[in-house]
Image (cartoon, rainbow, N blue to C red; front, side, top):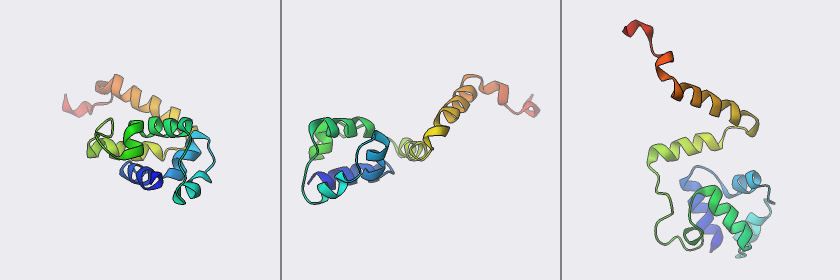
Length: 112
């Protein structure tokens, strides 16, 4: 059943089907339809698979590799990132890029 598959994939990534639908701008009412055995149209299923970083085949069947196999650390990062409010995401990206681009600028001067 599609609901069981999307629920498992979302749980593994630290999110929920409802949160994914909200982020994609789709009706969260789809979740209750899936619980009753309905399946999404191909456009919605593809958007969800791309958002979750798994192949459409994996999302539908849970067979084979999920697409990008993630480490526990990567899953943790995705879980954290998924919870950043939309209006704060750019600020967080800029902060991380700045600190990754010039990490020595922020190193403890006492080490010298």
